Length: 257
Image (cartoon, rainbow, N blue to C red; front, side, top):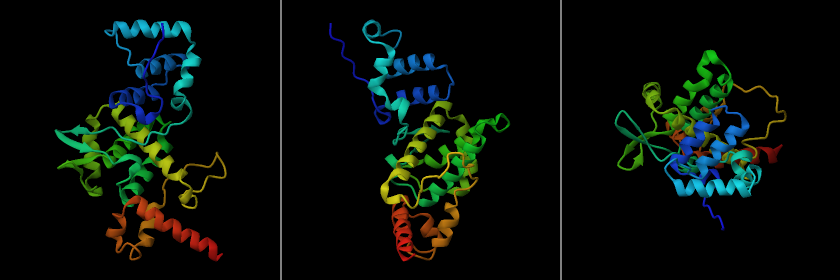
């Protein structure tokens, strides 16, 4: 009997339901073997009531080792490259929408806030007295997801962020963790683009201390009244548009020296 299964083999192929479960699993700190089997069941959509699927799944485990099966979805072990977001979140009865894939429609201002919050998380994720950085994740989610205004994502308002983050405490943890994984995958994608090599230089040492600020806020201020207009216009400039311009300026400066 030939066993054929259709499963996600990359992060972006996960359904929203699977993404929630995988995100929860990644932050569960399960022992490796338990983690492997839990991930396997999520990807194969194993449910107690799907008897036929369970029988086929057990047959698969008899003819193939777990280590061999894992080679078919190695991205989940080798590359956290999730660049899409959970489709929507409802908070206090209001639907909230995420950015487009790879943060394609956020502003440089939003990115500066996200980066500083992400650094805050990295600096506290091992600190039990700081709730392992979880509060930073709520703020990150509150930046990423803005109210749905007739099918489009509302403009981010930094002044409302603290109030929003408090309301996001009601969001399930697995969705909060999924937001973090999505943001991590997107920022890594952007930093890996060759055209931004000067903007995001690779660290010379892996032991370098995590900074407390990204410095992007200061960069926005320094570039105000330039290509994109005053501070407010520069702040709300599309992330990629801003990075394209800044990258060109860095290259021109490098060529002059």
